[in-house]
Length: 382
Image (tube, rainbow, N blue to C red; front, side):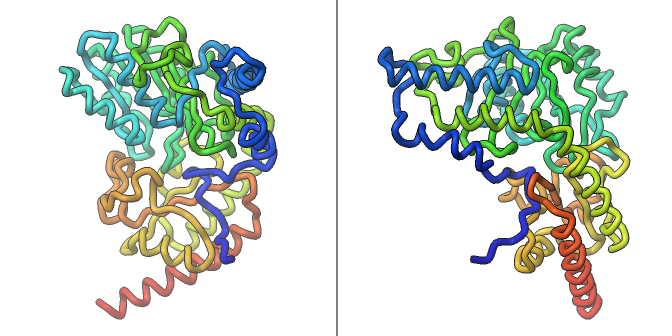
């Protein structure tokens, strides 16, 4: 079977073999409902408790602060909508480069009388200091700023932003889905009231995530029912997915430093080759995740380039996987002031634990050939 080299780790990471092994018993002989009082149920509850402790330890949180969800999108919605439901309508502020699962629930709050504000970013994708100051002066009630951008990989100074937002009386949330396992993620040090994580970005299963939330923050649940997860997320727990998430977090935390340094070396080599091929590197001067390169070629279409790379044996992306149905240019690049034509050329390569130097060397060769072919075709058509 044809299997392209996988260079789309920001979209999803393959299930870690050790995680798969840990999950298998909970897909077979261990099937109890964690709310049941008998031995089967007690085993399931103990497995969830262990996973909760593993997730908490990976981000320096307390296990009681971990609320399991179906993924990052649900966790982001739980915080934004859940916190807003416990407040009088006010101002909700999010960065202009947030993932749609933060932007869209913030927009939905406007139906309930809230005002939404997007905080502008500079050419590298970092919050603009002037717009951030004016946002704080407007006294927001809720603020959400992602720790690492899913497309550019740019890191925000969440620690500083959280301190300033909380000093003004706001609840501060950060989407750390892309950061976990790639950089150190410390809930206490960041100082946010809440933080979102997802399992499938770090070698865990699809369908598991968590909201790490300070217990002093009052949230209304999105899903009411039997009162699981401190009453914040009712429903019978997906024990297999939660077990896998817990182990994936433990492994990601153990490997983070070594993987960070290895991936950074690979990314720097890749970007040297990209520059030599004539690529425009987005957010090149910004502090970024070690595994992410977002680039484009003047006059070329990113979707076309990604399709040709796929046929050549390399799986990468033209932007966010969660926005792939949208033909519009990258929202993040437009917010950064990139011209729409250049933004439409964008391609994202994201590396992971199985990426090798040889794979990237082969990618460089294929990319250079494809770009050359596309430029020749464009010249002939002109």
